[in-house]
Amino acid sequence: MPPFVRIGTQKVIIVDAQTGDPIAQTPPQTGSQGNAWNGASVGADGNSPSVDKQGYTTVSAFGTVSAATTLTLQVSQNNSSWYDTDSTVNLAGAGDFHLSVVTAARYVRLNSSAAATITATIVAG
Image (cartoon, rainbow, N blue to C red; front, side, top):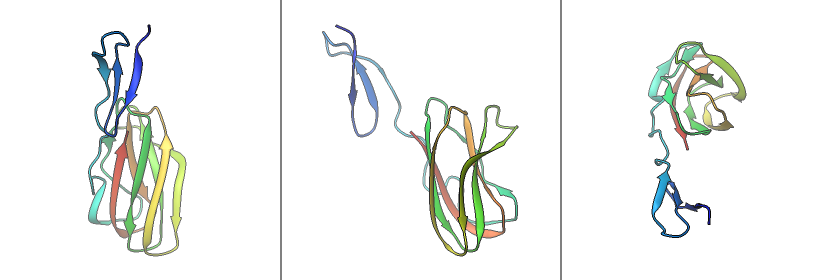
């Protein structure tokens, strides 16, 4: 019998179908509250710190802004050459945001088109 996948709330474990022994597992999601910006005064065209999401494909970014801005999720494979994705959110004023994307790129970050105070979290899983 081939291995099968057991999905828990924190990780995926591939288990030997005959013995039940773990063969491989994914670590829990990566990212923590406010890891992109935490009440930060971000200037126009400001970039958040990057998150290394190696081994994960799904990325979510969420948080709050104090003023009108467009947030764009950017990706990179080498953490130095950055590219805009189609995943953007246009905020007409202060408010909350959430965006999600599936990407094979190793690194992700946010870019803010305008100055604002931003708290943002980037999580990969």
